[in-house]
Amino acid sequence: MHGRSHRLILIGLIVCVGFPLSGAPRHLLRDQVREHGNVLVVADATSAQQDDSLITSARRNHGTAGLVIDVDDPVSTVESIVEPSSLIVRGVVRSATPKLSSDETRVVTEYELVPSRFYKGSLPTPEWPGPQPALRFTIPYGTLDVDGLHLWTIVNIFPASEMPRPGEDFIVFLHQDANWKTYAIWGGQFAAFRVINGQVVGLTREVRERRRDKPETVAQFEQRLREALSK
Image (tube, rainbow, N blue to C red; front, side):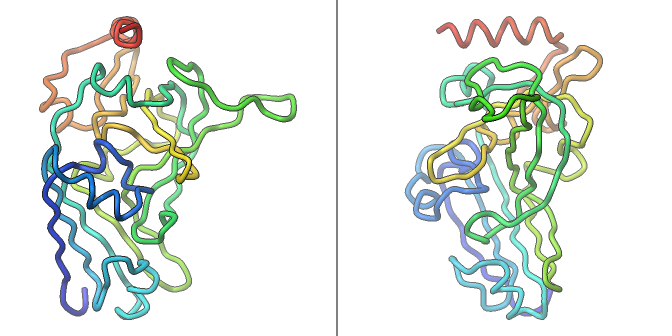
């Protein structure tokens, strides 16, 4: 990278736990930093300002700009994220597309998920007859080349090699706010589960180790989820 790095250290709530990084307004990131964990944000772009878009920063920085977000968050369980999640759904990932967040301050990856079962919440009824449309949700990470500019975001809790891929079967805990045009996972890396050969598996190795996950069938997971939803 060219130029010097600008570092901003925020100590407190991890926005992945309470607010999706892909769309949370900057004032929320500052106001909600007093309860859980630490997050270190490093803006690696010459002359980057806190509210600059990555595009603006890249144009100042020889065509490249990025963001590194280092999160130290508390462990979240299924039981702890059921209530704040507005949508809990199982489905197959149809696509994964990097894009800029609505404020252009980070790259996110937008996933299309074809739902097969809703455990909580639902999607609006389609205006026209036909199959249920895919829902979209974002995870804050990715690289994007646009207008000759190279943009990127790296988040330590979302390693690219362990993120969802098209064709995979997932159960995700999502949230949508009026200010956000898409869903985002609610609970950071603890809010997504792969379904592999009838087993429910946490998103990353770190998640499975920190939460001390045990082998669990889909039926066992769904029973635990129903119990949490009934409380």
